[in-house]
Image 1: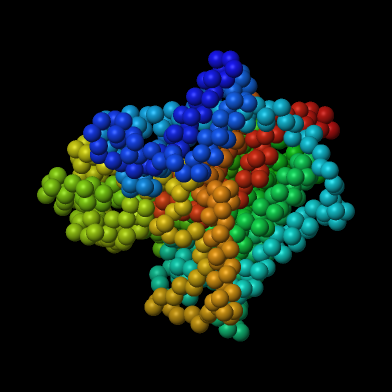
Image 2 (image 1 turned 90 degrees about the vertical axis):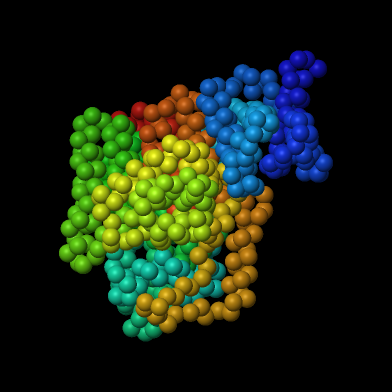
Length: 609
């Protein structure tokens, strides 16, 4: 066995040891004693991991040395850091696993090195395999059914909706969780109508509810579910049919249909009155149209002129914004970046459309909504991160808060409740102490002066607060516990009472719910049912563009990347429905990142045809 093979075996043991670390923080005398207390390699699964890693590293090590590049090193380092953060916060609720003391820092560094090797080897081999794989030369053993070949959109629509029907039937008339209820409550006057939820969508679902209520409230809810689920299915099947038109492999087309149909996240949200389901579906269609506008070969295969495609993109873009308020950031920025993919003569048109979308949304928010008596959203929604930092500081270092700082905080938040209400993975309890209606710019300025003054004294607690409230978005081995991933319930409040309720017995709904949660516990399925996994997928696919020296293609990922950024700034750690837009556009992202730059992807003969 040559030297490289010995190195591969040692590296495998190192990676396996990193995986065997429990994440516990043990105060013990000496580094080895501490390490012994935190390692747990006796279990069968750890032995299987070691055997698999030895076999894997031994086989691919020479190829790894040849195929690794700076981007694999960078991503491996980032993922290793994510592992340390995720392990520490999911087990300890703090960063003590890697910052507890000097001995712990050494152990964390050893763990980092083991994970770094694992990710560097895996990414290098994966990228090397992808680079030898021509997306357009993959041939299926069996062709699609004749009906699917001729009617790819309709076939995808029927298959997806058929998969959703059990959810829609068993949960008839549909689930109305807290956010969905508030939209209906605002529409019918139970509470003040604000732009907290996208008001256009609120008006739409409220109108459907009004029509259905001519019979009863159950029919009102069901009409919302029926219309929105059909629209969502149309969007998702439209994404799939475009993959077919783009000459994507049959496996990607069929896989995308099954992805949208069988993944519980899509079926459960199809029967739920909530903005995220509609927003994600329209956004997925937006990303498919975006790819067609960006690449002339794809635009030609769609059979439409670029001008009509751009107009359609703008329309779907504004509809995306009307489904959820933060959609404007994703749509506007991505449309501006589209100018880097179109011909020079078309750049002004693209920029004009981007400005038009932004202007249309701004007019709807600043002019139309007030004219209809719809109030602006409270500013507290923008301050999840600093409010959580303040609350954790007050809980951890109350003796270091000066009277001046306390007074400044108390002008914005109820200081006396912060420590008690602080939930490290959910900012809503802290934001609930916000003194709405009595906030001035001067008070906010004083608050942020106090915020900065406290930061200078204990900067670490601010970092801890932010990591604890966000790590679920970049650690795919932990399920958020602050709120459940699905909305399989009906919420009622005292403001305005609706008389809707489930028709089928609770036992049937319980079976369906347990099936959905089963996906979150089966290895492999658990990861693709996890928020953080899709952040990793996005980074891995973006990294592949750099690996192949096709960095320009990363600009098309601006919208999904901004979705991740919005999630990080959100009030809930690892909230599944917040990541749903990224999940929904993943088939397009996969096709884009693997195909971008290939000859068939930008076939000059097609561009000039």
